[in-house]
Image (cartoon, rainbow, N blue to C red; front, side, top):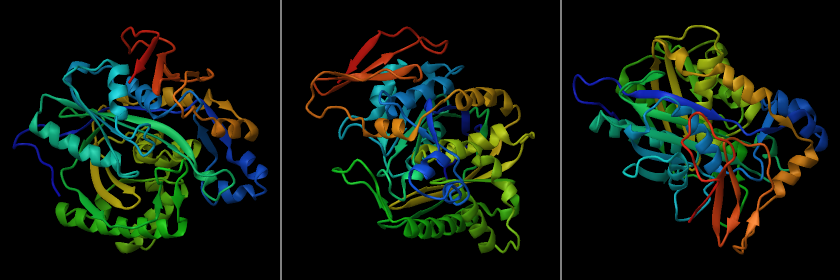
Length: 410
């Protein structure tokens, strides 16, 4: 599949990118001790050191809006044509999370806003549509928000692969971070490796089968990408993979390397993309782009002109392989120092506190309820009333225009 602008048009790609990490975390070593598990099973086996934990007054709307504030810091919001919100942690069966974020960010009234779902690949589906939108209307920009809470049962095998967070990206014909290549490879198959029925709060997953499907989808989508682009494995300087857990990137890169005939897979091509995920855990739709940002901010070298291969996987399943080239001057538009503050200023939870956060739930009968206040970003979920979620702006940012102290969004 190819998405091309008209001949002579500027390249399309990521103009700006923002990350939001919840302000609380649990060390995986502490969780392992509480569950009677050898800590190396989590730290070495999964590659995870910490797990981000959203506060009771956070959800995908607040996390996504907070990430978008950073992405829009020096972008004219009047140019935003469309807001696409990718998540598999939806808060409403009808109303899109994008509508809530549209209001919180006070985007233009003619900005189209909707939600996209296909497990963790929803954000990449949004990226494909954003490229087509910009190719059609080069003067317009698209805001993509990807936010999720990875949630499994307490004490289950999936528990240490939980996490949360959000990424926001502005897509335009003036890429300042990553110029995207036109060629894509895709793969779709109806499988049951991971899913969450409407009546469950936790996902159902067949872990070993999901890894098998992931690797098959990787080679299938890579094969089409190569057919479309004519590029070789060696023409990619770095690789970013969807990260259900950090070690999965090593498995994926070794699998693809061997599939293309590389005798010794070089994990140096992926290691910088894993730094943030190791401290956040799984963020579903955001995770691939968390990896991309991690690469750009922690590589410790100028990546200008380097081509990055990106693999997106969504259980169920749909996958895509695509690529992009790092743009000159990109370092001025990423925020390594800010991410260091986000990660280092978080509050460490005991396992008991984490479990209390986990068990917190909004009332299902629609009665008025105020969520207890915790450390969050600019936006927080203040409660519900009459089945309506209530959001508030807890502090004004230099990136925001004045908001009412509390807004009810039907």
